Length: 230
Image 1 (tube, rainbow, N blue to C red):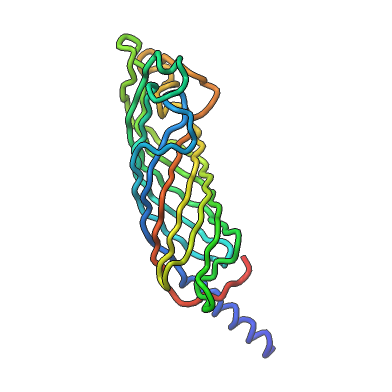
Image 2: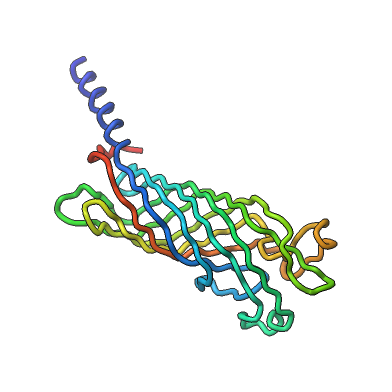
């Protein structure tokens, strides 16, 4: 009974301690669009991304992560290497607000309370993203893309980054992240049946992507956690 009581107290202490280590900070970087308008380069930021990020470090190898980002998305066929796109010369510029929730996994232990060194590690992040964005349609008369409305869609984030603790309280990271969306109307290539007669173009069988490339700086706070099993 004595050992059982000690175990219960140890688990309660662990659960309480692990809830005390957090990170909160800023994200800044660039965005680029991958779809039926403009370039098809995966990493080619041409517009601004800003926002906030928060993490709960659940163990030295993974953290629950949430973020809210505001971004501009823009693309022009004149920047493409595809002569057919250059000839039609479509272009658009819009914005989106993105909220994302998921898990960040580090390749190496990232224990910010270790006294012998400051940790650094590459990491992966994925989860679920919801984003509210400008939508477009092709005006067949003017042969131009026009903004029609704003829509909410979902995406899967796939992020690769590298982070390092730069002081006792701050972590700096650089990352590149693709968002595979469940939409094909960020550029107006598949507007549906209502907008401007439902004129579509490009490959309607492929959904749109967008990329974020940037830096995060986070402030860490809380007591040293007891890293229990998941």
